[in-house]
Image (cartoon, rainbow, N blue to C red):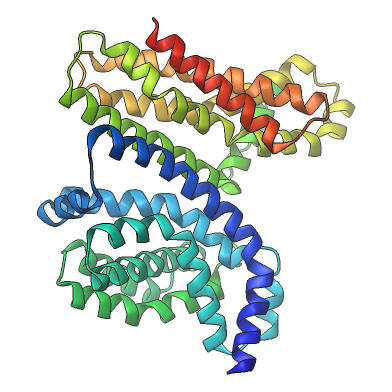
Length: 379
């Protein structure tokens, strides 16, 4: 028993820091819009759970949204630095699986809190183990699409999508949990079976912009999922607000409510893109790439995720606002570009002055969001 506890502690020492950093970012990205949504519209966790039981569309959308958000973060538990050493040590399965379960449960805390506040303990356990199992099986299937993992993934997804009794869901997801974690731990570090080459010879601006996007898509999926979560929750709250309290001046409200989520969506991309630029600095100098092209590629890469999410939010918001789809999408797209430009320039300013403190950057981003919100309300 003491040896097992020591092994669990050692695994936590290796994997906990990168996992908890991403889990904390995900929790903050989800918690802030969720608090605004529940406080402003009186939406309770029990209401969300009840809607998911009544409507298959709501249930599938709720599960799919959370799995998209938590999947890239949960993957860190299997690919973080030190994972190769843990695989080579061939640790006993019981303490290894126990440590992976606790790490994955830390990632699933917002999901666990939703069901803990609005459902029974058995249903809460079913939701927790089901989310971990589906994410782990997806990680395994992405690297090595084995027939057994794909069959178990399809079966578990079908069971949970059909809204079975709480005990049936808890038993099925609990039985699948160790199999899923073992498969993910075995396959996560393998190279994907299918890889697409997206790079082509081009001008410096296009090549650098593509390189930035590939960094976000391949390495920083957890940051993108946090941006998606912030904008999705903000859009859902805005839609409920517009339906509960219609207004003729809906556009200022739309811009004001989504100012903070869109600012967060842009801010999460700044640090990895600046790191990208630092790594390429010697190559860019040797190729004599103009500074204007470097800055423009950086700003476009920062603005791409937030502007894409803003355009998608415009489609959602148009269902509750007296605005056409083109008007709402165009306004939010332009708004996202402006916010991303301000956030990107603030990040570059701190980088040039060697003031890379996270607190200073967050303070500036918060000020940009507050000024944007106040300006939209006063418009």
